[in-house]
Length: 123
Image (tube, rainbow, N blue to C red; front, side):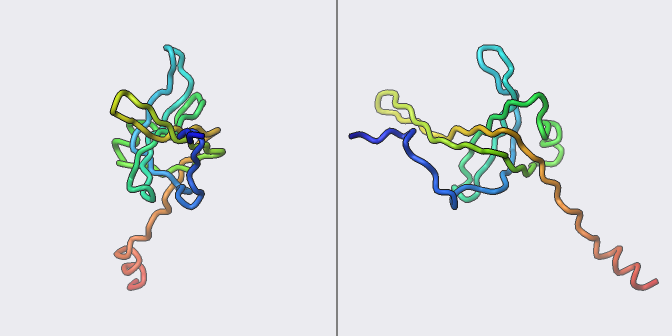
């Protein structure tokens, strides 16, 4: 019995807990806007890229914010990741398809500036 690529699953330890978003775009099909697509990089998988689609009215991070800050870190609720493959003659394409219920933008804790701290201790 042949194995279909859709039967494969990724081990939990290979998945990230936090995802680095490098691009965000509208998710639409046949002209109908369905939500937002977040292109993420996966450091544990040799920086493979994957797009996570979420049916929401507004994105958690905008493309302008990404261009300004360079990258955003998010977590996804109820993330479902499935591999896909397509053969076209001798060429085979493959990738990861992902959907989630929602995304949460993680904010970095501001780092304390050592120069300010040393000035305060001198006073």
